[in-house]
Length: 300
Image (cartoon, rainbow, N blue to C red; front, top):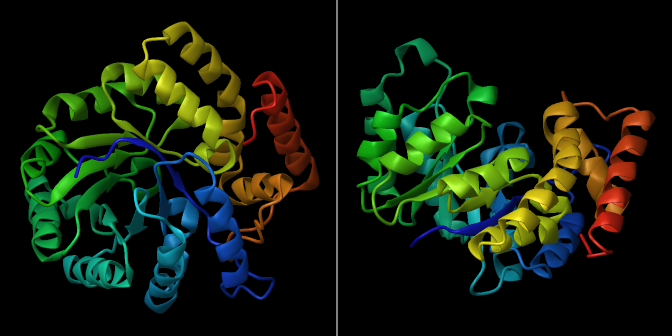
């Protein structure tokens, strides 16, 4: 299975008491399925995965599965600090209906995590998991970087299908692309550098921006594939301000505010995350309205 295209790492809705809001989850899923996205990622970083327990995780995947039609991928985040727990989470995700799992790097004992440690960890997960595994590197959150040498070795594993790299470092993205074996997908998570990553040879993206502006993300992807680079570059410039606001500036509460502005059920973030201030909400709404106007009213 080759992973290509644009995927949305969708947020998890909670009610005001901090419990899962499964009605909102179903409603939001149905709207995302109505877009042209190639698939959805549940329980990624934007899904607040570290703040969600195993039973809740299984419930979210199982609820999403029947709402995602054939031809669209359901990818579930199953990163854990221990190899055993990552294996258990990956098996549970597969049993609940995930088509593939996205396994964030362990990071707590970062000083002792060597190239060999990562190779053994991911190999064990992939050996035990009944669905394809995607590596997941997010140095900005974890404080560790998956060595390129580890990715190169792991790319030959028959059940490791690719990697998501969430940082904006184009040099690292380029090294991943060069090191990857045939059929190994390189997906990026930084929307402000999506165009540049595609030019380097990335296979697509798993980006927060795709939750609120899926058509714009898909247009950049398709324009690059068609060789219409000037148009893709111009659209990249237009989406970058919003992409930064809902990621590096305001994070998950900002992304949820953007969803609420669009009529999705964003809901509160789970504590200890806190809502953003009203002026930040207004700034996000302004950028979203501006993007819709610039892109000739293409629905987002």
